[in-house]
Image (cartoon, rainbow, N blue to C red):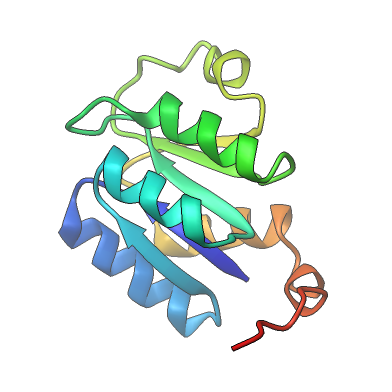
Length: 130
């Protein structure tokens, strides 16, 4: 499984990435809208873990672009606010599969990813041509 982790807090991003990598997940990190869009332009991902509160406010734009590039990509939204607690995120991001409040345990994040992107999915990816 290969994911794009968009998280403004680099310490938290590193913590989640290291945990997920130990679970066999390939993690690519981005901290801003521009960095995430650049990754999405040139790379494919099995899922997107998206912090809804980014310094440049681009979470919805990132999700729109991710959905454009890969219409079925599951998006796991994470936030430290209660702003989307009414479920409106599922209207704004059609590919949103889960909304998780931070702080969260890395194993909970891994379980949600495993639920929405089973490991068998990763084995069906086309091999990359060098």
